Every structure is written in C-alpha cells, then in structure tokens.
Length: 301
Image (cartoon, rainbow, N blue to C red; front, side, top):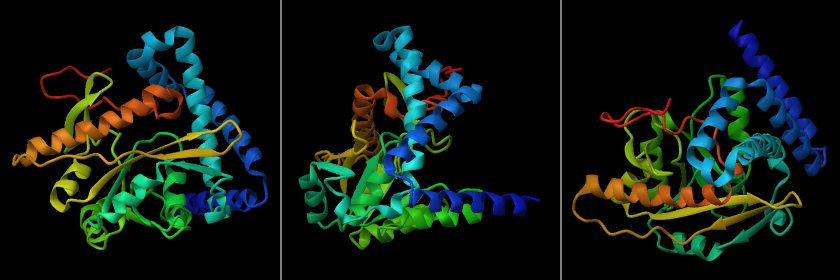
C-alpha cells in the first residue's frame, strides 16, 4: 500500500512538471498563490502557528490587522515559490535579467577567489531554491544539504530538479563528510540555518528570544577557513526575483572553539533576522522555530 502511494505521488509530480513546461510562469505563480491561500484556510494547525508566532514576535510592529494580512501573504508566497520551482528546468544563464536580477555578485566572486571553499547560507526566506539553481547557471555549482523525503521516488525527482543547473544534493544523514569533501574541492556548500534542529543546536538570539540553531555552518568555517557568504532573495512585482549576495561574514578565531561557534552562528542568524524583519511575509512562520528551549527556560507554547 505504501509503495502504491509513493508511485501515485511521483506520478502526480511528474504531471505537474510536464504542465509547468507549457504554462506561463506568471500563471504558475498565480496558481501557486491561490493554492497557498487554500492551504491557509484548510490547515488550521499551521495557520494558528503562523498567527501566534507573528503576533508574539512582530505583533507590536504589525498590529492586529497586519498580523492577519502578513500571515495570508506568507502562505501565498510559499504557494507561489512551490509552483515556481516546478519550472526550474526552463531556467538558464539567459534567465539573468529576465527572471532573476542580481545585486552583490562581487561578494560571490570574492568568496570563491579566496580559494578555501564557500559556505553559502540563508534561511527559509524568499526563494532560496531559486538562488541555488541560478548559482549553478552562473558557473558556481553547489552541494545542497537537504532532508530526504520519505518517498524515495519523489526524492529522486526533486534531486533532479535541484540539480538541473549542475548542483548536487547532499542528504543530512551523511552531510558533514560530503560537505568537507566539497569544501576541499573548492565547491560551495549551501546550508539553511533557520530551523530548530531539535538536538545538537546552540542557542543564539533570534527576534530577541534564544533559538536553538544548527552549529554546522560555524563548525565547518572554523575547521576549514571557508568563506561565509549570506544570500537572500525577494520577489519583484513583475514576477521576477532579486537575488542579493551580501558582504562576507568576517570573523577571527579566539582560540576557544565553542565560543567561536556560538559567536559566528549568532552573527549569521542576525543577518537572517534583518531580512525577515524587512520582509516578514517571506519567511516560514508556520515552522515552530522556538520550540526547543534552553534547559532553564520555559518553552513557547
């Protein structure tokens, strides 16, 4: 029965990929935004999480009406980028200036010019998957750290989609070894650092509350000396995206590895928070980011 379900899910995904080859991009985005609103209405649990976290961490700035409006915009955005991703195979180097506009490419070039490997980081913000795919088309392919799906058929299809520009997928189960190999080969590694790792995280400030955060980025930077490069993306009114590479996160080792890891993780997390505060509707508020608490602190319920 499980195998039948996996086969049906993969078949539906293949059908969507075929449709995405012929449907205009703007129409795909409208369909996706509509789908996002539908799930907002149907998924009561994650709708409540979205509203609760927005109210807790941005309620003063947004006020009551703004919280609800931002929550709906958030779900529309994630529906939009999901359908956007179906059309990744239509992208190429020629998409620059049409589908994608860049700022800060000099920081990308500087990171690779240091020849120590590149740790590219972001959060579940904007269209992070598009950023990775287009970087492959720019000639700077990445190793992408992802959580594998339960459905192996669907996972293979997604890996092909993510790798259509030369990127390769690294599953978290064997991530550290593969990331080290990539960095030693002077290949970039893309890591998302804005989700609760549940175990093994370090606690750093995020929206004025300590949040458990993966230390992998900082540990690899400390071990290899790789450049630490932040990148973020935002949608434009015309359906295109602006991808921004920010200045490298510079840091000097103090001799205390544990303190260095926490300090660097905090600095990188602060970059993400800055973008989320500017564009709160583009971040994954339906994820319980602050669920894991320090031993001496009550959790967010």
